Length: 334
Image (cartoon, rainbow, N blue to C red):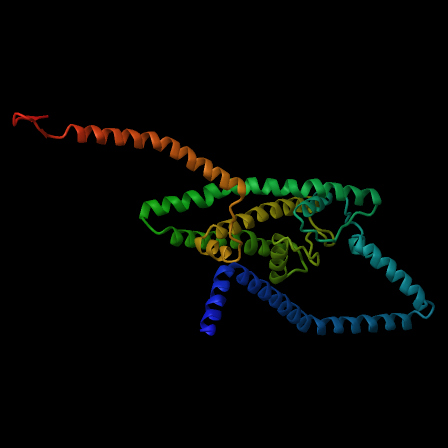
């Protein structure tokens, strides 16, 4: 008997807090996925890091042997200064000395990466005034960019997703989940082709040191706003039409980000994903104000329906009173 009661109590607890248990499971799966990524990256990249460290150490020792007049301490000071300048986007190499980071087109590209939160990190403000302005510019610009992107995506969704899906559904009498799923797949295919595959081919041609995989990697890292900064276009030696190229990249990043958001919003509107998301959400609780509104509406409805009920009862009484009654002389009065 006690076992049955305890089992029933456990089932009630599980059923009553199902979304909470789903959320706990979601957190555990996310942590495991995070750990899985860390393990894979560590196993894959650690050998290459060790190899690079060994190669740099060998080159350093060889350089010191070939230049006896240079001490290791002075070399370390020079390398530290060069690396510090490199962190600010300034290189000591001759093949990059002609590329300025703060001409108008480069500054426009930097502003777009700040507002889109991509942040490659290849160029950063050098002065305290620039850093302060970057903070203020981002505080205003990032929410403004979110508002801008939300408005643009909402308008595009009407013509790219909602109306086509509704038209196909009415025209061929197909189920909405089927039409929405096929449409989302087609949208994803178009965006991948137009903003990943084709640009990757163009970047592999424009950037001499990039292959197709590296170009595709740059497109994905950029449009997903990860922005690692290990690949930045337009920074090569004697880049042709560099200023126009930078403007084109800025436009590409903005349009690509909008396209990515449209695809994500299209998938989020699928019924299957809506049901999946609801599994992890808390149930909406009715607040006291909402209860008062419901009570007020019920009172208003009752106050309107009471006179109607009274009229209905009055009509019923009239009908009953006018029913056939036997008269005293045997005739029927109607």
